[in-house]
Image (cartoon, rainbow, N blue to C red; front, side, top):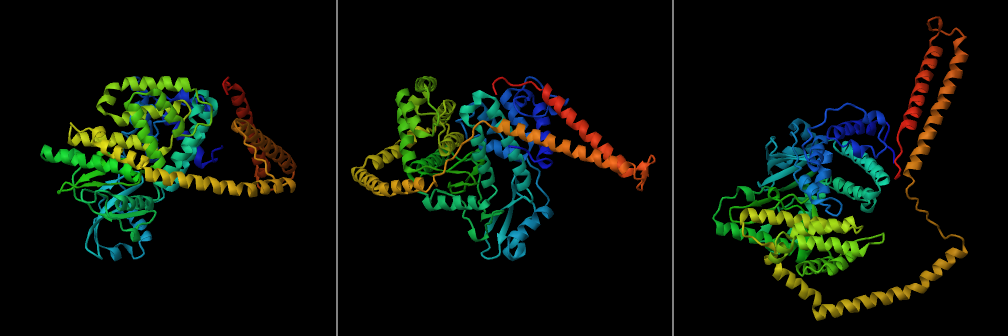
Length: 555
């Protein structure tokens, strides 16, 4: 993987400078970062800042893409320790809003009839601003309802893609050069996170998620998402009803009402993950509003998770195994939860699981801090080569958020005890004899269908062999460094050919007397000599620098 010559390298050099300032030079030394970049004198931050906090501060200084990337990365407890995730969860968009004159062309382009054709009132002052967009308050001309308009900032896709390419480049280097990181398959993780960031650039996904939630919602009289106007939503515009309410942090109501609101939120959350399988991925206090009649509104549906029936069954098995402190059962469930392309050291995994269960023994007895326990277990699974589905990790983060939010309202709130009826309902759905019989019949019918297709598939394979059309796919691994070396060598060879051509051409011109003259000789010839000298000096410097770079014995 190579960086683009101008667009990426300029930004990459800026990123390296910021990382050096936060004292991440040891990490950069495990990449192919040019030695001249690493030798830049950059005043470092003070020594007593913890490692994970320095990483979060670096992300904030690196800008909107890294902030958004860090926010999504905080949903991956299978590859990151809890301390880093807790720091990344503090990442919040601290962006100065753009003037309305800059945003207006985006709105006018996305709305066929323009602002005045859709809105009877429009406040040009944004009520909120983030790294990707800004939110405005307006009133629809058609039905006179107040609405919230989220507008994507202009020209943000290109710089985001550039930053994501640079992140992928450095991570691929770390994956190749640091053996201890290889079980985490960081390039694949970054590719998934990259797709997550790019999805957030499509505001129609957020509109779709909110609509799906309202259609599946089990408690519409107590919980809801803002009504969306799909006809006016585009990849760069999101239009929904304006919700009047207070955040859980600002709520000032009697304790009885606060406790009731907390239980409503817990009921809704368990309904989302256990009954429908579709849940809000980040229900922190800033994404919730409580209306005057104590209804809860879930805002910002850009991040949502979905659990299939099989995933939900595996989840309650995991809950049951944890409550019994049965490390062997947890290990067995973990092996079935995610993909594990390499051989798993089962005994070592079971020891690590036992350590976590002992650590949280008191919490498990009281059914508290369920999210933190799942988070830590998922990290244990990931560190032993088991990468669970993204929706599980998103669920762990959501559980922590809902516990924290509900506790703000009612310090006595207990999510575990509230969820017991829902888990019992899911268990009944799972072991219901009628459903069990239908599932068995369906599975055998599918197996018979596959068996019926088998002779035809074998015949097709034999015909392909007979015709010599059987493709062979070669999967080359660990050749990025060799590819980069060959690319570098051919670049030097091409420069050498160009230098030789310049010298020969300049020698032919220098004695012709062609005007204009420079120091009595043709200027074209002099310029050719100077260019060839400069390029030759660069090639020589690059060769000396590469030969002086220390080699990593692990690579």
